[in-house]
Structures are given as structure tokens and as C-alpha cells.
Image (tube, rainbow, N blue to C red):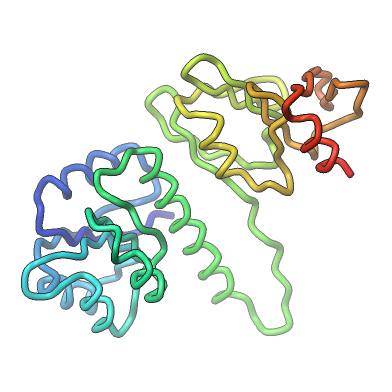
Length: 238
């Protein structure tokens, strides 16, 4: 399933950046580009648009004014060089706010959030009254070897820092991606994942037992709890 996206920005360079970033995102497809907000009104009202990348300061009609005029609002990611509009934007229920110039990892976090919200919205819409549907598996997308790979969080045993890369370990194999541990620490749900060392984040659901300051996972991997992470880990397991 792909989100159909519309780019609305008066700067051609901004379009180029988003299009280039989306070359590595398999779940978003650009179906239109507008260089003025006034052009976009008819597009949004007549086509199926799931996601808008929206600039704020544009000629004639500004981005937030456009949002107020739309009868049906798609998911919206603001892409602006001005941070003073952030509060007003979130009051209009935008999905995320990207401050130009933004990096790919920040862009990816925003589109992943939009994708998850889209899935949740459509699941809720398809549920019949009185019928309980199981929650979808939580997933993340990572870039590995020029491909985007979707991983179920429940399958991840631990993450290991590896120079400028991160090894995402499943039971007996790993995927290598150029990310930071901090970016994963912010993205992964804190109820299931915890950083136990400057070089390791573990999934508590795959912890077999503890032995002193060692965490032993169900695949027999042994990970030492770092001195600076001992207190947080104790609170986590309690």
C-alpha cells in the first residue's frame, strides 16, 4: 500500500529535495506537484490525496490558509524555513513539521509517522461496531544496501553500534544501516526497548535472563550493561 502524495511549494529546489528523498521511500508515491497553494485546492478536492508536503510562505495563499479551506484534509507534513508557525500548524492537526533544510533521517521519521497514522485511521474506519480487530504489528523502515526494508519490531533482538552504522540484529542475522543509536532510541517504543550500553539497545521481549551485569537474550547473545545505564536498566526491569 502506497500513500499518494502532493507537493505544494513555490520553490523548485524544495520539490527536488523531497522527490530525491522519496526515491528511497517505497510507501509514498508523488501524484502531483503544485507551485502555488491556489493550484492545489482543485487537486485536493478532485483527486485522492493521502499526504501533502506543504510549504507555508507562498504567493497569494499561504499554506496554513490553504489548510483552512479544504473540505477534506489529507495527512499534512509542513516543510518550512520558518519555525514560528509550528504551534499554529499543530493546532491544525498537521502530522509533522520539518524545518528547512531538513536531513533525510528527519524526513524519514516524518513520513513513517504519516504512514502509521494512515494505517491506524483506515483500520479504525474498517472496524465494524462490536467487532474487535487485532492491532497491526508495529514496524519500522530502514535503509540497507540501497533498499528500504520493513521490519517488525517484535523480530528485533537488539541493535549494535558499528562505527557510523547500526547493526539491527534479528534472531540469527542482521541488517546494516547508516543511522545513529540516538535516532533509534527516539523512534523505538520505550516500553519494549532500552539502551543498556552506549553501543547496545535491547528488546526486553527477547531477554532470557540476567546474570550479574550481563543481559542474556533468547538467542544466547550476552550483552553487558554499561555503568552509565545501570540505574535506568534496573528501573526498566522492575
